[in-house]
Length: 120
Image 1 (tube, rainbow, N blue to C red):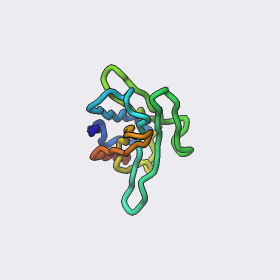
Image 2: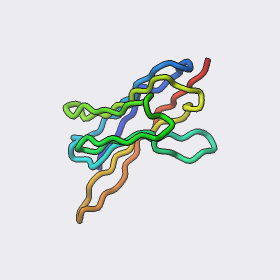
Image 3: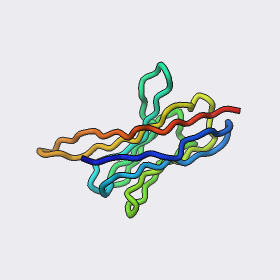
């Protein structure tokens, strides 16, 4: 099974920037799609950004123009570059992978999460 390891979370001031990394144990070209989700206390986990193996991206409306998802296929890594951070963005950020299985089905794999705190 694919394993994911996130890093890069921490404390940043409003308006600041942070880059999250997610390293997969296998080539990301073998994964249908990868994404970043976040979950704040008392709230449901929500999609922040995703990228497919062919490079198509998708963003939540709340982060469009501020966050960028990208990848380094040689390093089996997906990044989330976050700029103009807002206090409401404080959450645990999770990496997600949709891994292909037999008969054109897929399963979802999650990392352990990396916390991001935006505070002055």
